[in-house]
Image 1 (cartoon, rainbow, N blue to C red):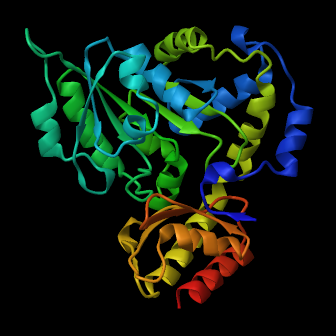
Image 2: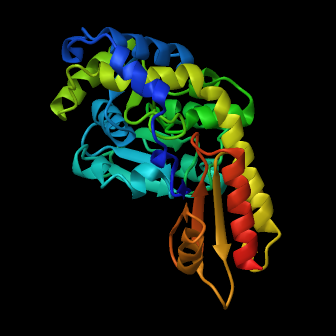
Length: 341
């Protein structure tokens, strides 16, 4: 099957599995796993931060980052379509005790006027803004890559109010490739950043949190509090490290594949999509036809051994990933053309 539902559906390669078999292991709770230590050092280097920490997932990474840096009752400002606001089980409020203030913005960027109106020093009646969060790439806005300039502008405004900037950088390497800059440049203004190994990088599990040495020391304590100490975690770190060293150049192919699919869809009747939003490995499009809707299109694609998922009766998201070949993409485009014409 060709799976377009998410890049989390990618499977580990034989080389990743061999890396697990060859991994040198120890007790990571006591920082004694050499493979984990090597991975964390590499993550910190790539993101331009002092230190990094392996965590089980991106959601876990966002949660421990927010919990470590924000006080209960403080406010967290994010984009109204942010992943950590919509899809992370309300952990910002339920676990961290923070009040979420979502604000608008085009293509995943925060509206700077709205941000200025929302940031607060706090007073007798209203709690202060403790954190501002950005998402890069921005999932619900089509996989948009946020520029370093926008991130720096948001960080400057947040820091002026004594608030911190956190980046949910689940696919930060996709953003760096799309913008042709280093991931460290995109992460530089942030006080903390997370990214996933299990999405576009193609590893089976895991994420990293990056920041200052002092912050990572505190986050390690929070990870333990949340049950994230994983002992011989080198079996997770080994394929993640392999992915960092081998799969980053392949992100260009993922972006090219997404663009090819989008170009095909853009010429088919009854399909609406914003080509500007197709910047990385996602294609969001709407099926506006009387003869077929989004769920039915997904059912028809199964006849071609293609798995896809609809968001509602009109909206579909396709995500390309490291397991996808040029031939797979040709198959997808041919299937879409046959079904929709």
